[in-house]
Picture (tube, rainbow, N blue to C red):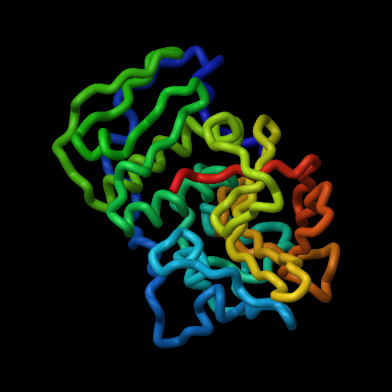
Length: 284
């Protein structure tokens, strides 16, 4: 999607040691542990369609983590980063209980990166949290933990040691804010490996890189034990930055919010059409 992220390829500016401090607010990590009220969990709110069963997901895997994302109460509207209501309230089936931040940063690709980073952070797999900026510069969270920050001068990016060592959640959020500002659908489309559509897994992203471009996240996947047919759930953020939400399927209201995988040459979501359908995957 077209966004307001800074470009390291064209902008004639010089910024140094960005996002060295914590975010404005003090949000808590996403909690996916079993809640007392299980109706708040994605897999409980959205049971598999008749005849289908969820594909196996090993405990501790990314797919299992996504399947247990907490949801806000039914009927919750999608809000923008500034608290205003999104103009289109007919695109979502549920709102994920995940903060958006106080700035217009966590848009479509950013939300997919946020989910992957939150999962890896929860697993203490800090070495798996790394993203490329639009100029190809790789930003590793493990290096950020050591107190290094990325210095941006014109189109040049370099690491500079400027902070104390910290692996706190606030450190993660500051790191992500920096990445959100300098990465997006274009960088993800170049960074992540493509996978065949028939090998779709929870956690994969459907992506159109560029400006405009867009990203949606595959949140869950079910399969019919006899026919082998598959159905999947999708989630997105959008522009401006807004609550991450589970998408409805306007093409098939009876099946909604599930989407049909078979013979899919294009993917029509409420606010974007992917044609062709390109699927990419974060490294496990």
